[in-house]
Amino acid sequence: MNFMKGIFPIEKFRQLRTPFYFYDTKVLRDTLTCINQEASRYDNFEVHYAVKANANPKLLTIIRENGLGADCVSGGEIKAALQAGFPAEKIVFAGVGKADWEIELGLDNNIFCFNVESIPELEVINYLASEKGKVANVAFRINPNVGAHTHAHITTGLAENKFGISMDDMERVIEVAGELKNVNFIGLHFHIGSQILDMGDFVALCNRINELQDKLEARHILVNHINVGGGLGIDYEHPNRQPIPDFKSYFATYAGQLKLRPHQTLHFELGRAVVCQCGSLISQVLYVKEGTKKKFAILDAGMTDLLRPALYQAYHKMENITSEEAVQTYDVVGPICESSDVFGKAVDLNGVKRGDLIALRSAGAYGEIMASAYNCRELPGSYTSDELR
Ligand code: LLP
Figure 1 (cartoon, protein in one colour):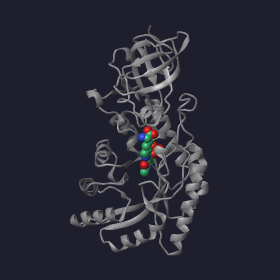
Figure 2: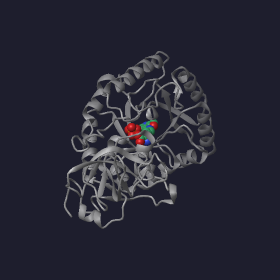
Figure 3: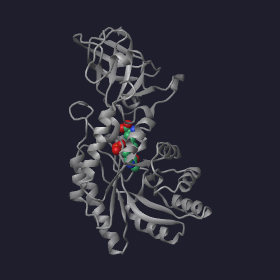
Figure 4: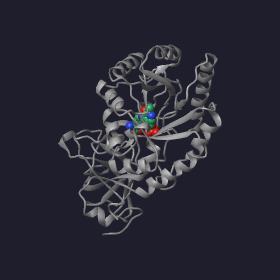
């Protein structure tokens, strides 16, 4: 049976080896257009893409063409961003453990800013910059101790997390930076977590930044850049209902709640919200196994291709895109020798048979990039809708 079900070019899919990631570039471009429209209502907002969500060169190129900067957390990501043509002056480098070669890579390419997470790191950046006769822009990542209503593994702004400098230490670290000759302190950086849908969490962050800014201003410390990280969530349950996240409310929340000083630029680092809904993992059914109480649909994709369900018990909507048979209930599992290699239990799918194609939706973020070769498996391929037209 060959037919178009929804948004997928099934006939083209049939010629490709599964599993692979499929990226709908129209969804990505529409998302980027919306981001630019909503952010440009405010003349001092700058949006960076968090490369960690997906570093596929085809997507990076489209994102760069749409003018976003790049937020990188490793030397590898800096290289990927440069290769995709992101200008160095739009690259920021964050991360709690930057290796010397990664810092040197950033210095050699004159990236815009290092988001620094500790005094020892600041001192190493200062030393490496002095060796090169350079001055590095640095921002401090402050841990705002704001809890986000999301999965415990992806909450990052609480005091007990490994990330950032505590608010109590902030002024001391700024003083240290003032004494170092090869770093230039330019801003404050925050990030409270990921997959956040409650705008109240972002309001809490704004309130905290307002307090910190007042405290700094009382000491005549001015910064030009405030970076509020990423975190805007997406609708995993209904990928078709609202494929473009609510950027309007997101940016309006910051514009309304954050007391930016006139000279300040506000930076965002969005990952998931940019790329998640444009991607699906396309997989083939190898076997349907009749258990005593349930049926298993065994796919050729597993946790090595899409780790989120096994790692975070994350939900990804599944669709049998090659069947219109009556709906039945299956446990959908992968082929990996791990009992956590399960995509979903009691999943309703149109009647499944060997050879059917199953789409795992909302897989554009933290999907392909988190794939591994465990069990000596090949990494999944990737195709864009432009290529399969
Ligand atoms: N900025 C910083 C400092 C971050 O740590 C992160 C994500 C982002 C920006 C981008 O956040 P986003 O806009 O994508 O929420 N692998 C997990 C998500 C880990 C997020 C880590 N940090 C998942 O699959 O849900």
